Length: 373
Picture 1 (cartoon, rainbow, N blue to C red):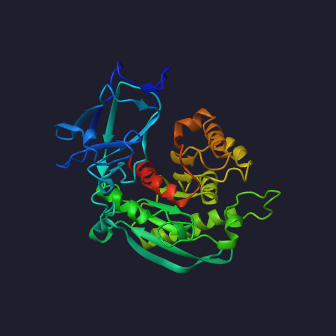
Picture 2: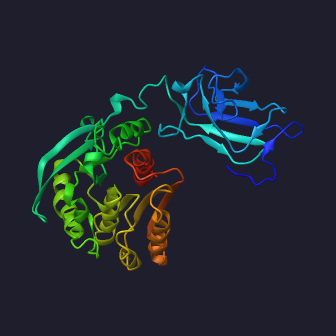
Picture 3: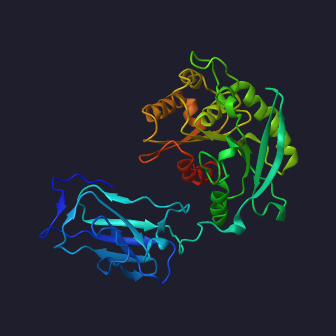
C-alpha cells in the first residue's frame, strides 16, 4: 500500500491512523497488531484491537504516537504461534505502509493454530509410485513417475483433470537437496476448499541430462536439445498410460503441464507445439534467458484452442527474469485471436527468489486459477 505524501512521520496534531480489520476465521482470542513501531511485541496491550462484531475489529493509534514510515506490521492472536496466514495457509509476509494514510482496511483469511501444521493430514493426497523405471522410448531412458491422487479418490467414481509436473524429486520430498514445493500439503489445504479434484503426475528430471532434456532449441552454449522428444514422451507415451491407469478427464481442457526454471521453459514449449494435448500451463520462473528464439515461436503461436497460462516470477531472481516475463506476455498476446483464446495470469512477487520455497507458496494459487476459476 502506498500513498504519496510529503511528510514521513505521523505526529501529534495530525489525524491518527485507524484500522478496520475483518477476519474470515474468528474465535474468542483477542487480536493484536505488532510491528516495527513496538519492536514486534506480539501481545502488547497497547496494541490490542477492539472487537466490534463477529469477525470485525478496530484500532486507532494514539494521536501523540510518532510513527516513522514505512511501517511494517502483522496481526496475531496473542503470539506468533497464532499469527495470520493467507487464504492458502501460507505465512503472511509483513504488511507494509510506505507513507502516512488515515485508514487501513485489512483482511485476515486464516490464523495459525498454536503452531500446528497448516494442513489436515486426512486431506493429504494418496501417493502412488507409478513406476520406478518408466520407459522413455523417445530418448532411450527410464524415469521414476509418481501420482498424487485426491484423498477421496477411492471413495467416488469421479473423473479428474490431470497436471504433469517436471522435477518430481523436488515436489513433495522434504529431504530434497534443493528444497521442496510441498505440493502434497498444498493439495491438502486446497481440499478444505473443495479444490483438490486434480491428479498430479510428478516426473523426475534426468539428473545430469536435465538441461539437455528440457532444452527446446539448440544454442551456442547448449549444443544438444531434446525438448521436442521429451514433450513427445509426455504427450504420446506417458499421458495415454496415465489415462488408462487412472480415472482421468483426458481432454486438453482438463490436461495441464508445468514446472519451474528449465521445467517451466519446456512446459511453455509443450503449450506451443502440442496445444492439442495441453490446455493448462503452470509456468514458474521460466529460463527464458536460455532460448531467445522462443519469442519467435510465440509470435507464430496461433491455434483455435482455449488455453489458460499461469506465470509466476520473483523480482529477486535474475536481472532479466521480469523483463523476459513481460516480453513473453507481449508476444503471446500480440495477435487479437490469441488474446481471445489464451487467458493469461501473471503474478510477480517483489520478494520472490528462484527457489522451491517460493514455488511451493505459489502452487495452490496456480492450481486454483487453472482448474477451478
